[in-house]
Length: 246
Image 1 (cartoon, one colour):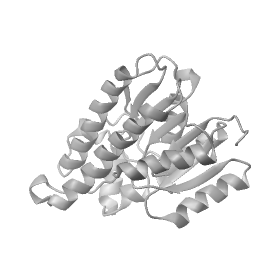
Image 2 (cartoon, rainbow, N blue to C red):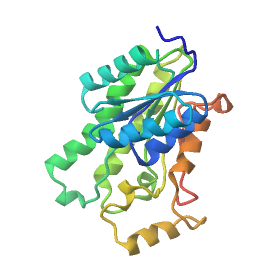
Image 3 (spheres, rainbow, N blue to C red):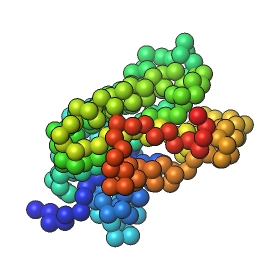
């Protein structure tokens, strides 16, 4: 039996980008980390190795969050290796921009499968298995407020996440579990840069009055706040972390 009493956090999609930054920050905050990944085991193991090298406790667990069986296995692995889960960060997501009329059935299904059903699957499992007093942070997007052309399907998937999160926070009454959502603006990650021209990237960087793209660390610090006692009276909310873009 694991005798370590430090709290446990699952971070989905944590092999790179924002997820990896969140895993690092929560480890620094004293959490034992479950680095979830869908396909890139090498990058996930590098995140774990980096955490181990700095004295933190972490494991990598493969799970496609769009599949209920994988999500159950993710929680099983967390409990078996580290203990019952205290924090769930639903960072895993996909983003591909395209006019609605040109969107294929496959792209629609993939976007909703990961962004919406993936969040649904982990929330449902967390309702059964998260420790009382736990915290959940889901991910939306500032694009939802901006109504940018090309983002209809992605925005729709994140609107569903916001709706589920607000209701779920109320459904957990009596458990002292808080559920909040972060809605980042453009963040300098591989996911954001993919498929964009330099002109487009520069345009996004100029949108906020702070005149820069967000960095993964910016979002990681916000997640750290939302799972801490400092935000103990924040529940069922959406925090639009975008430098003032919208």
